[in-house]
Image (cartoon, rainbow over all chains, first blue to last red; front, side, top):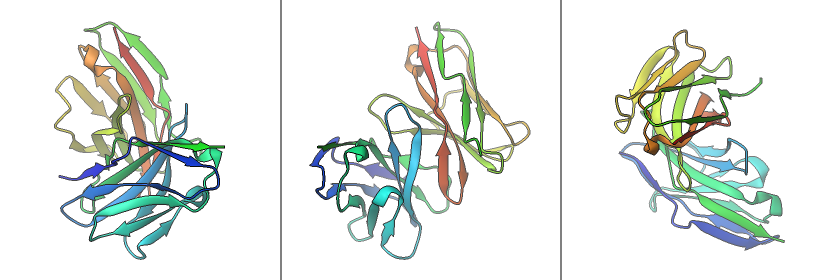
Length: 113
Length: 111
C-alpha cells in the first residue's frame, strides 16, 4: 500500500527567502507524485506532478519539486517566497498501476513579511 | 469550463438521518473521485468512477456509504444512518491528464 509522510506540520519562512516543504513516500510500483495547495476557503489546487523524465519538475506559481528515488523523497521548493504563498500544502502519491491517490497530512506554510 | 461543482456547500443533520451530496464534474472528464477530509488531515480516498463504473472503493467505507454515477456525468454520495464520526468535508474531484480538479466540498456536521 502506498503512503506519504510530511514530517513538518508547519514551516515558517521570511519573505524573499528560499522555501522547502518536505515529503517522503512509499509505493510498491512506479511512483506518480503530486503537490496540491489549499488556500483558505478555497478548494485544493494542483501545483505540479512527477510521472517520469527529469527529476526536477516545475509547476505553478514558481514552485518546483525534486524527485529523489534513492531517498524516496519529493520535496517542494521555491527560490524566493512570497507572502501570498502562505497556504496548506499536500504531497500525494499513487502507484502507477492504480487510480487511488494517497495524500499526506499537509504542511502549513507561513511566509512572514 | 465552470469547474467541479458540489452541492450543498453545508449540511447539518441529526444523527441517524440520511444525507445525499451531489457532484457535477467538469464535463469532458470521465474519471470522478470522492474524498473525505477532516480538520488537520489530508484528503482520504473514498471511491473512484470511470464513466459510470465504480472501479475502486476504500475499505474504510462502511456499508452505510454508497455512491453512484448513473450516466457517467454527475455523481451522488449517500450516507445512511449518519453518525457523529461522519462529520467532515466531503470532496469531489474529476481528473484530466493526471491532474485532479477539486470542488469546494460539502461540509457535513452531524449533531
